[in-house]
Image (cartoon, rainbow, N blue to C red; front, side, top):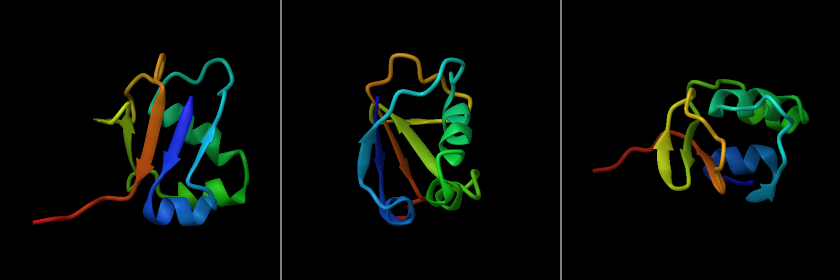
Length: 83
């Protein structure tokens, strides 16, 4: 699956996107984040406060317990404000 990173999440990880194959048993956004945090200090830093980083599965906002099975793209981004 393709992971896409935006704003300071991208800056902390050091890349805009990547293709990953999570290990068996990673079934939710929260599980994916937990696995990503084990991939290096840049990931641990980007996801140090998991409650802040938002996710979208195939361009639809997703909650931490959302399943990722079959997802083509998962994006991670900080909270947004607007008017």
